[in-house]
Image 1 (cartoon, one colour):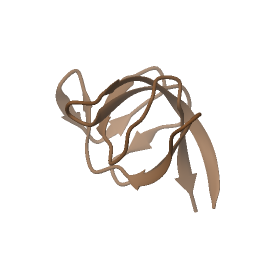
Image 2: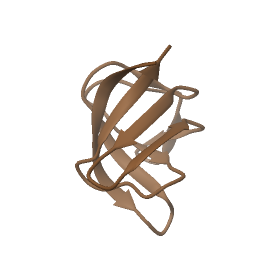
Image 3: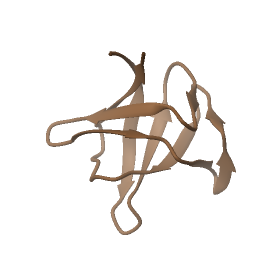
Image 4: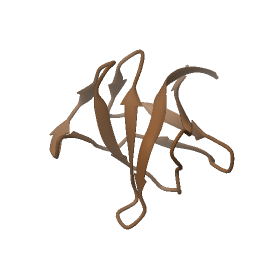
Length: 85
């Protein structure tokens, strides 16, 4: 499957298992599958929900910063890819 880079992790909140990413290109939607890859991170998951400024959203556009609950530990500067079929 192909992957398109959509942004980078800007922060990881370990106590709640949420990462913040800055979307740099393409739109990100609930239901999309993402791949987080970094120096020690490498996991794939489907997006169940997203928040912008503590409000639930269904879509994040380039230039927006969005919070996502993740199943594994992410680190600042990890790259985030959207998996496309």
